[in-house]
Length: 478
Image (cartoon, rainbow, N blue to C red; front, side):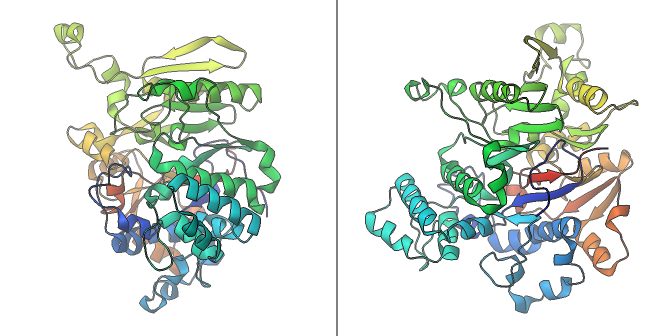
């Protein structure tokens, strides 16, 4: 295998990533448990798979591993195949080492008896299983056991423990920072099993053998277990949606509903001590379910183009639309955002940024050496109430397949209009796949394009394609 771990930007051409396609656990989310399992709603499993996420898988393969799919669409999509191409346990599964399915990796490490014994014991301890269930799980095949760990269901369809429906959001199990990998420390109990499975995969799968020494884990502070339940800032919690590698020497870290100040400070110190980066910018956003992670309020499109929520723009932060009295009373002032940039050589003298727009402009100009004006595309075209509505359905949570070519949801009409006004071509995933299959469009020639993915059900899971991707390797920006 060629290069595996190397991410030095948010927009370099994507070469390898981790994903997890919607499993039957998503179809087991019930209204009474939805919020405990971090869902706002229940989704229709068949639709989210066949009519939505499968398009994502096919596009990723065309961009990253075309040999697996080129000219095969009619066979793959034939109803008689029963989606076998997408099923990790099926002989017809695509088995790509570039678009890497987590369930496939998990089943692979469970071939080892030693790992199977340890992981069964660990999962059963977390989930409070009986000794009998633990012994029964040891007799499962690796494929069946991997499926049970993820969906919570036994081979005879009994629910042994809760599913982990958030496993589709692979970004949050960890993040690649240059040639290192940071494992997350989830804030919510519902994601504990995800973190455990991810740890075993990264420490035991042959893919990652060469990089074992480059895996970073966060431990609780010595006083963490004594803290009261509501002292969230002092707890060590971190999720990958709050980490962005914006250049080879600069990482952004969000402090949010899911990532604590304690974790942000710890990872900053680790990155400096290991000489991984020169700068870390900590962005404290309001602790609101609307925002959750920093990648729900902005993502990068090109060196000099960003998509973001207008609430954190320079204009709103300075209350430029307010009159003198409104400004003094802070009537139109939005939720506060605090941005501090720390430099390895002078950690005691951080630089403050007034707005998110100021920070991202600085990244484009000083880290990525853009000379012209930095462009911002705003959620909902910065029109109320579409800005808030479309941010809620992940208008700002886009995945760059390469610089200027991003994936987003088709339901965010005003944001799409803003992209079109900014000079981007708009294309629907289904249309693009047909063109790629027919050979009428060449991937290397695609530029400045927003690819719209079907999203009626996916968007209800509260996460976009940035959330549903864990890049392992991006080409460096030239």
